[in-house]
Amino acid sequence: MDSFWNQEIKKINKMRILVTGAAGFIASHLCEKLVSLGHEVVGLDNFNDYYSPVLKEMNARDLESKGVRIFRLDLNDDLSKVFENPYDYIYHLAAQPGISSDTTLEEYVRNNIYATQSLLEAVIQYNQDIKCFVNIATSSVYGIEATVNETVPAQPVSFYGSTKLAAEQLVLGLQRLGKLNACSVRLYSVYGPRERPEKLYTKLIENLYNNKPFPLFEGSVKHERSFTYVGDIVEGLTAIIGRENEVDGEIINLGTDEVNTTQEGINAVELIINKQLIIDNKPPRKGDQQRTAAVIDKAKKLLNYSPKVSLKQGLEEQVKWYKEKFID
Image (tube, rainbow, N blue to C red; front, side):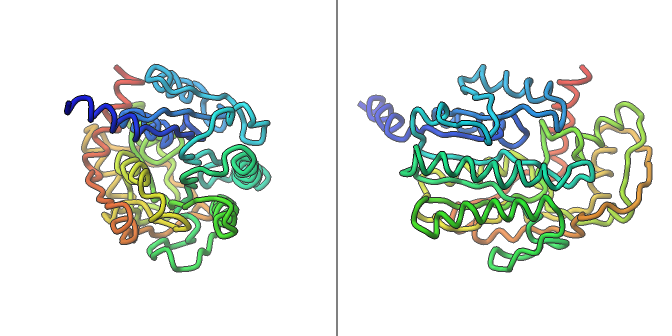
């Protein structure tokens, strides 16, 4: 009897969920977590060459082996096939990521603003009764210092932060008009296994193992960050399921309230690998945040969110992943 009842509960609670940017860093972890919770997960990714498509293909194979179907499409393409069957939730992680002088404003606009609008138009046309559209935003919208709660006006200083803020407002604008149940989650300095190759810790680990100079932007060693382990981020994102009424229309900061400097992060990786980094000093990078410190009172209240992984623990996991995939 108990077994039958548990099966019925699982059947009732099983959701159909679309994750955009599924083959990327955070989204691939989110897909795996959702599958482990018993949900049907569909992914979408354009497999562009912003960084090596080989890495995305590696992630995609891992997901497909777990039963995730992946549409290989750009969000600016015709999305009607993606919406042949409706979804209960959509997590929108696909974006032109990061602060890079090699990325043009046009690329940020196309992949952050136009792509979000294209997805929203498809949702309104095919799937308007969705329980919740979860937009994934960034602490970069706050500007030079991201140390405030969600009520403080955004002041982005980069193309990335500005276009992500615009995308967020496209989503929340539809919510304000009563056309869509939606929320937006602003993430803080996420790291961990599968982190993009140009990001701080993957590049640190790679350069240490290969004795290559590490490009360090002037002043960045003193930058303070809420470095947040990807597993903690995923726990917060999946906690939205079943809480769609509580989060509807909300902007929510998601990160750790533990703050470390970039230098402390470098020291931790050097200690784990037992090697000293070769530094290649570079001029300051335009648009870099000086300090982030996630204020997560709202996430704690609405999502019962409680990040658990320390920087040292998370970096040990990331080094382990890197060794398994690229060295051993």
